[in-house]
Amino acid sequence: MGSGPQAAKIDFSGLDPASPGSKGWAEVRAQVVDALVSYGWFEAVYDKVRPELKESLFGSAMKELFGLPLDAKLRNISDKPFHGYLGQIPYLSYESLAVAQPHDPHAVKDFADILWPQGRPANICETVSSFSKLLAELDQMVHRMVLESFGAEKHYEPHMKTNKLLLRLSEYPAQLQGDGEKKIGLVPHRDKNTLAIICQNQVDGLEMETKDGQWVLALPSSTSFIVIAGDTLRAWTNGRIYSPLHSINVGGNVTRYSTILFSMPEDDLVIEPMPELVDESHPSLFKPYAYPDYVGFCMSEEGMKAKNQLDAYCGVAAES
Image 1 (spheres, rainbow, N blue to C red):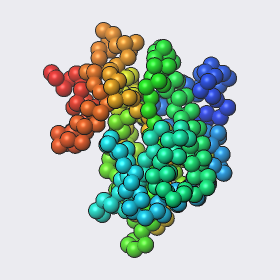
Image 2: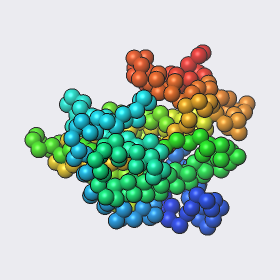
Image 3: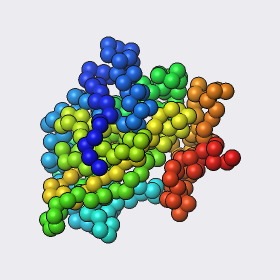
């Protein structure tokens, strides 16, 4: 694995999800779709997230969160898979907390009150919700641009009404012993959701696989984010958008902090290729499915053995 060729670096500065069609929108839209079709990911330059907000998040809030006793962090629970605390994994120095609907200040307050029932640190809720709200706007812009590019913009409002967000905050502690070499932490996987927006504290570790099987190290700048397409977006676009394998390397001598804003459909929404992308030349590649059912399959023995889980679960070719 190495630095290798990077996917597109796309500048969203000056754009707003409420103003599609504004100056620069069409140019950025073309770059976004080309990157997602060719690579399944890109680097987004997004200056709405100011350096001081990132510093408040990574330099203060996340250190407060992961400095909590384990019993406090274990109170971050959910009945949905991967929506709560992750950690205490043998041979993997890693902890992660999750906040559902993190752009909602009330949801963030509820999250913090569970972890700090006797009183939370000042500004932590404002930092997390402000950061999440800005990333939610980036998520909205990418959604809209993809739909517009495929002539399916009429689906934007329905998609946004059923679009759910989850913020995952993760810590990969520095290794105080050993040779400092990085090792595979999170195994290669494709995201099941729609989009993921990753931000890190300038400690690299995210590796992406290209369509031809090469692994490259994603190298975002201090003002940018990595946007990755998931299987849900691949299904909606009838396979036009690529959902790439990626992994995380851990074990260096500097602690890595990262956040991931996941967008995903509501549990009862039927996911299937949009009709605008299905015709005689492009038959439907996927059978309709529900998101939680697909996540359940991916966690099963059969799903974990599948080379491509979406194809194995609902690919039309899998039936023939």
